[in-house]
Image (cartoon, rainbow, N blue to C red; front, side, top):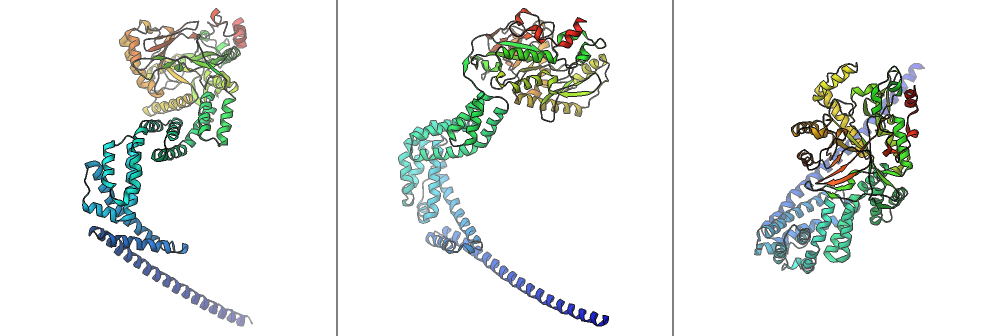
Length: 628
């Protein structure tokens, strides 16, 4: 039974295999048939192409324009008559039409270019070709007629050239329908050229809003060619501007530049009146803005150094350092901000006081602030993080956290490395603005002045700094460093990253000389030149264009002094000296302001009583250790 069953199943498998072979043979036969047909079809197609396009081109070369046109129209009819299902197989015919059109386009453009560039006079053969090829030449010449009018409108070609171009082509009967209306509009085109070119200049500068406004204004005054061109450019610019300007506006909102955001979204609302996102963003901006008025009074400038964040290291008997009198604690700085906010001060950018686009002279600008507010400038002095300040409980460097926010890094009394936004004046001011957006006018934060001696932001960024850094480390009983060129370059990139984030968030930068020169007023020009050359090369190159200089210890140089002229010629236009009371003045191509130094030694000054309550701002930890 078992044997019989086995034999039976073997026979069945063989029959199944036989059927499978038969089916496979059929499939192979069909595939071969399709392949043969396809090969034949492709071969026929290639032969067709190889024969037809050269025939077309030869007919043109021989002056048999009627024959050439018949070839073109024949292929075109085949394409037009084909059903949708045949379009795929018709693709080679479409390619042939493109090839023939390109042959004609090259010849027409050659003739037109000669007319424009060389005042070429059309021959009988040229005229016969242009006239006889009918719709093929007509569409191309029409493009060129419109194109030269566009070039004329944009100021790229002179009117006599345009007139000569039309003079050559207009008599050809096939082109009159296009040429005659354009000829009648040339005077209007000429009148509009100035405004259109201004609109294009705005567009080229990335000033999309003014470009659209200008084109809209022109469009209201002209119909025909100029009006059509304006419509086209407005549509193109609107498409180009929408995404980048929306991104810019949303970034302005994120960085508390509400007044700029309000202006931007107001302009966009006119251009895109139905856009709900623009309306929503505009509402967000206007909810944080108030009436702005020109301010004519004094401008308060306060200045702080690095802050004491580790009060144990600063004030305990074990670590106490006499240098703590030079610094505020993080608590004291935050209390000063609170007092200033309660007294209606608002952060402003001093560069808004000047128009300095011309390097040879400076124009005064009236500062604008929200109604009821008083302007305030905050300067953070010499943010280098010298090792000598470590014993005072200050940070050791700036770093970026995981959220790309600028933080201070310090070592606490347990030898732990701590990273915190509220460890330094930068982060404290940033977080205070986040809580009180009306403390800044249009996103202004403060000015960070930097030297080059020993470090920048706590990083050794040049070989010149290594010896000074090691001397300071040795004095602080800390290990020496021996950075490679790769280490220094890495540090420079880290500083650049921090600078980029700071600038993006409204901070500005200033020099306080490379060596933090104690008394610039009594320093020889040659010394200042050497010092400034090093600052520009090693430090300024990390910060981009810097237009402000903070004189160390307030020992400023008079603006007419040859040394001050040297600074101005390098692009420094705003200078900060020192003084407990607010004062600023415009000089010969510069603006000068006094800054009030904030340290524990100076907080009791009578001049500061209108800024804050001394008893309210003193850190309880300092007070406790001072009393004991």
